[in-house]
Image (tube, rainbow, N blue to C red):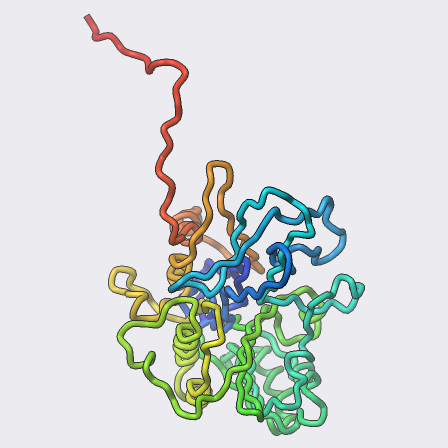
Length: 405
């Protein structure tokens, strides 16, 4: 979720393995690491439920689109372990002494790919459509955060028996009156009495609202948060996108404000911390825009969520005075805070890797200074201390230099 002023440079959408979802860049209200309210939430999830056999993220062991992978090979072993004070579950590779595929355990990914109708059924296993997300007749209120909207397409994906009854809030970042995107959305929304359009104010010239998120309230007194990577236009939902859905969140009936009033934030990777960071992000839109949403959402129990949220909002950050233990940090600083809780395995022969998916990049400056010193440095963050330098054996004694006569 990124509400970010793009500072003429970074329009980066980072997707980490088991992670991701776009932040509120509104296209700057992102749940990602950014420093402006970006509406596309980026989420790092550590929800891994296991089944029998060896462990591997199922969605990563299947080809996403043709051509099929050559020489597919199951990992030797994978084991799921729990971290206290960190992500709820993390997969680790551990040697088993064999590579028999029958001993492979599968770990369900918390992130689903979207259905691509042009692909065969075998390529759409475990995928999800927009109708799967919005078509439940129990939905009574839906807040849709995004950059591009086709309001008619959005409405067509609600259950036909209730689509005229669901209270729908469309939140976008095209706040200037002459903006063609705003004009198009406003005209389309007038056809629906139950649709209200809200504009996120972007104070920076290069700021955008790229957040892509749904927050839904249901008639059975439950809520759900969905963070994804697609615009609300038909074309985007015909391509391969990614979706993270929270479990259904029960209503606590009364507000449990312990974590809200505490001077120290809950541990990263817990549902309480996810809730705190999500509410902080939503408040960045302003009380007049999202006040009713935060007032409702804080009444729901997030204990079943095992994920971390990285969001961007229009803001300035003082790195020397900010304390991630007491406040939510936005943008790359927020991403760094999360990565500081994640260990990596190191070995003399293997280097840990982070996979990044970038939808578009504007300019990163005349040199690679920001990319190297700030962004790539952030991605190298981990809770695992760096290995000590190794003394390489020398085949011959070091050369000596005789003193000049």
